[in-house]
Length: 274
Image (cartoon, rainbow, N blue to C red):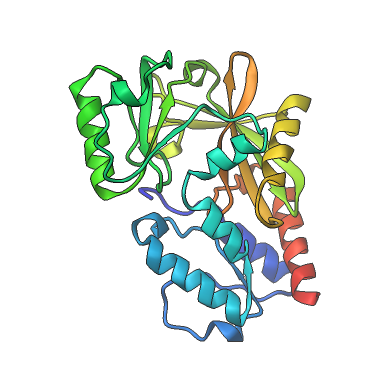
């Protein structure tokens, strides 16, 4: 990511305070991972560029030690096709069309019968809104972007959600399946992307009962229990819906919640002791 890691050092410091020894290592370093009792994926922000290699690493690490989150979750969550799985389990999500690599169908044919005029096209495997484009379905830029993405992999088409411009996204963070804290991410003026490297800002937030309900439903759809999770929600027709369920390397906004850092380390201590 085009930014420094803002929070892993907080976890290392809290771990040391409680008597745990923690280190920050590149996932692709040469190491006997069996010598480490607990491996926690944190900021592997290059995984989407090297996905087969990353999944191979994660699978083999889990064979020799304990990986958090587990491989089955990582494998399921690395492709945004999981949004279809959430929808199939009656979780409220942003309407999403998955277009397979190599498809030559036109956007108008793909979206026939749908009243989507302004859309977002993004890679199915990506992070931080990298590769996302906001456009109108008739724009040549739109067609060209989809073609480029489909030359490299699967792509997603979603209707643009206007509330993002004024309400942004809400992120709910969970540890061991329990709600910890939430933040609101607002885009910069003239932007629709809420990430900080696109100029977005972060604000304290108290989630509604409905936002919590949708988030817990999304977590329940995961193929295995998660030790950490972030659910990103947007407002669609005055209803919270899932934009993304991030279970691999989410920013957890720990700087906004000292208790969250302490809670997460306490959970990790219990995992090592179990």
